[in-house]
Amino acid sequence: MKIVVIGSTGQLGIDLMKALKHEHETIGLTHQDVEVTDYNSCQILKKHRPDVIINTAAFHKTDQCEEEPIKTFTVNAIGAKNVATTSREVGATTIFISTDYVFDGSKNEPYTEEDFPNPINTYGISKLAGELYTKQNPKHYIIRVASLFGVAGASGKGGNFIETMMAKAKKNETISVVDDMWMSPTYTKDAASTIKKIIEAKLPFGTYHATNQGYCTWFQFAQEIFKITNLNPTLTPIKTNQLQMKAKRPQFSALKSIKLPKYSIKMRDWKEALYDYLIEKGHISPK
Image 1 (spheres, rainbow, N blue to C red):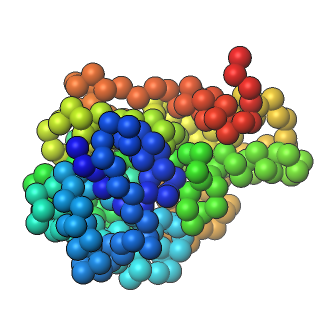
Image 2 (image 1 turned 135 degrees about the vertical axis):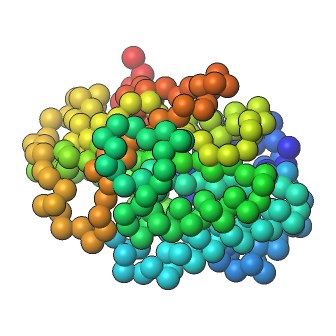
């Protein structure tokens, strides 16, 4: 298949390129190559005549999204619309990468593909709008991921949570992490592998959750990082309201898939994924 990855140098984009390039003709487009907010710029997609277009482009600085709602919607919603429209015009399948933040967090157990979205911040609302625009192309997959960590680090965020924790620990800083916000940590390498399987198996079009199994609080995630790396910094649990963030966050936004296991696609536990990530980054040696 011929597959275009928009945002090919981002944290997930890099792992998608690695996962797909050996068996598919894979074309990576960066922000310099295509501006998803501009329909005319998206015409470059037609030149490649792809079978599949994966749109990882996003504005995801959650607090900044509250301050810049127009920019947020332009990238996450209008950008999704432009990609879906262009995909439909060339007969390509659109894959839109969405988020756990389309849910409000009040369920207190993992959200499945059957749960009704109800976002509580600008970022989540814009991504839900992006989902709805993506559905305008009948040939679509909406892949919801969460709390991503990948070797490349998040573009625009400078690294990821794990690298932040490791840096603070090595400087002997006192570390405070929220212990009342639950999520599904997800290795971009595993998410990319799952997306590849969805494409290759030609699963029914629709929405799928692609996160590592299990869930934890950010504090528990930090604890596991330090346990595996044998670091012992001063780690203190705090409450979300102590951070005074601009954007409301869902308190419990863990995801699980009830659809993928029906097709024998299962993602491993987040702790196993974290262990492999720490090896890949050179933080620990393989046993």
